[in-house]
Length: 62
Length: 315
Image (cartoon, rainbow over all chains, first blue to last red; front, side, top):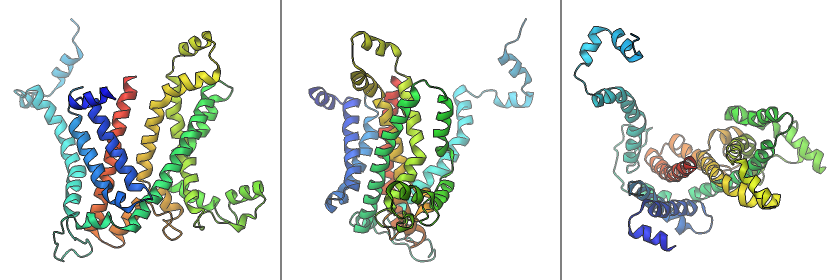
């Protein structure tokens, strides 16, 4: 976990890609879950944020 | 003296062409050759995408080309993301997605594990198992419609034979409770071989020496399975899950052939719903926003997929 946060602090690609992937996965789950309409409403923003982040951080150094 | 193939090609090039190319750098030549593909890509992929994004902020209706087009801002997106019917469609897609992936991964991995063992007729069985995924979804949808017929369908007959129920007492594609399972069964039947092939590639990439070392350490078969087979096949399994997830999120043809989204709208997946908004209700701006939401979702999943693929490649 410490390694992950260090990676985030030092702008390492793997850590940021992991964070972006988690956001995308969370967005997809929010889009399809049957429990709360509010989660569904915010799902697109979360997925979009994760996807844009993924595109940007894939240019970070390893 | 023997001439190299490059010299021979250079000599065979007509003088006029050679003269015209003279003076072009390697970089310029590379751009010259790649340019047609880039132009085609821009025209066929990028331009429609940008146009769709533009339309998603308007109230444009393609069946009223002369009507005034108004800029509505984020209204289409807000309407979609607060629409309970579309939310239900997303849930129907999730039900389809989760069950098809679970069944395909479990059955596909089990089949790959069996096929990986050497036995007589191994290749023949592999070919037979792989056959369904080679068929067109339209064909599969059509003949499963016949298999699901309550009166003459073989599926109903088989279920009746096994359970003792009357085959004509239930309709797989006409019953609200059974129709979602009908499409899951067909998709699983069709695409399990694909997952099996990916798992088989993973199983065959494991060096035998690891198992030999485990045998020397007296590790049981069960322990070998959980500590060697599963961890080493896991990246391949993840790849299969992502690939089937993306494909099934876009599922259209098979379900349209089987149920057409019915009965009611119980099997109406997102792509079918989108088609209805765009080409039955003719709400082009609204459907464009819907398409952009689905595109971002699939693009996000595809990004993870590419990352997983690179990890598998590094192995």
